[in-house]
Image 1: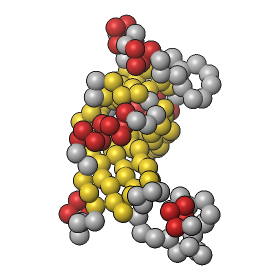
Image 2: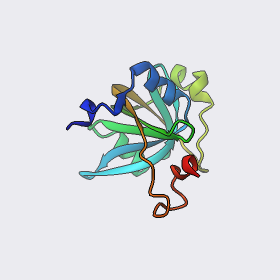
Image 3: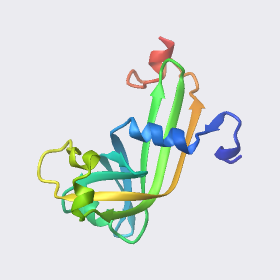
Image 4: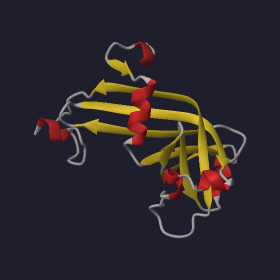
Length: 155
């Protein structure tokens, strides 16, 4: 059965996907580099229904600007409700060069987490945005690692 048609998986509306993206700052960016997928953590801001991040020259920068679309993913878990969620944005990345875009308030205050110069600003224009939420199964408490966030709900 396709996950989209499962009754225990709630498909998130676009507005909720944007709300979750706006309320978080760290995502995983998936790009294709030399014909192979690669994933990088990026801190980001949401700006005009797109996602913006800074990067240095290198693999992530070159992979983001390839002609293939990129994907960004965030996810989370609420130990109080025992619900997990995931949001995936697929889009076309481009380097921001226009001064009016660079001086936009949300972009201007985008500070990278990792030190060093991050001279490139990348905007991912959304082609597709989807999300889902689901109830997390109870862990086998004696077999589940202490680091598993599901344990907090049951201890």
